[in-house]
Image (cartoon, rainbow over all chains, first blue to last red; front, side):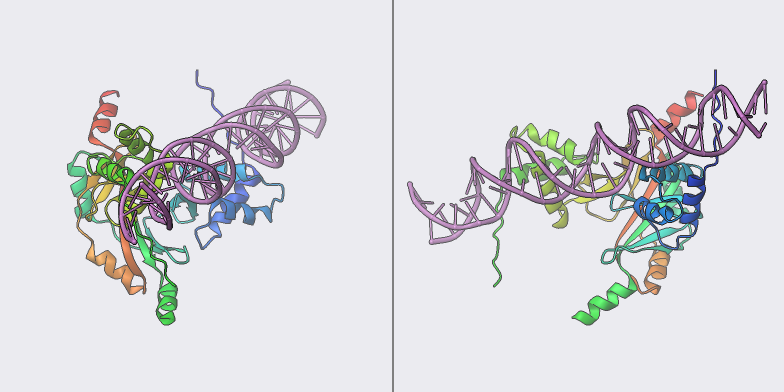
Length: 134
Length: 134
DNA sequence: CAAGTTAATAATAACCATTACTGTTAAAGT
DNA sequence: ACTTTAACAGTAATGGTTATTATTAACTTG
């Protein structure tokens, strides 16, 4: 009954994956598209979206959503994000899992498979800039 | 130079605010629109969006974004959310502010003005349902 | 390694939550 | 009541994302 679909290794997938892995920021699909086009000029934006979703569901990259827009993270280990309201930059935040919080959630009978902490405010650069302007 | 705009108290604003305050779930703009239309049948969806944004920026309600869609919360006090991947329900989570984490973020020179924790997984009902189906 | 199969692609249309626009309505001051 | 104009209803536009489809190119098989 089950028709098994063999996956194919395409240049597009390899290039898009590499672009994310080489990104030290947290690019959007559009930005990844622009970077990958330098390698494959005929690349289509739809392909970028599809491949990114696939890579994320395979656990090879991470999707993070900021202001209703998907960004992609080369890191898949446990960490969180700080988002600057001024410049929009997304910074990684290393913070341990809060056992106390997890226990409280699990006590309610919920099964948690993902935890996401987001901190909003001003990054050091923007905080400084706004301070000197005053 | 400054032209002061006097705000007007309209029935639309009052009804929309009341709908959110009476909501024990976390409705979307569309859902709030449907509920408020029972009171004001000629209400426009655009008005709902505008008023909700206004109420949120006044701190009278809270906007929470789940799956790239705005939901609205009658609570404005410090709390977080659990989102069920199965039924989409959003549940409140009471958890204290993690001082350790905050200190780490502030050590980087960031100024934090909002903290958002989201827990994803299965709510107790859906967890049970999926368990008995096996 | 040529031929056949079909997964993945490029290009484009559609989607949908949200925002912008515009003529009209109705709060609030005089 | 009259005037002013903030807010409204109705509708068009926006923008990130997803769906569709004919075509291309990985991989399989002979």
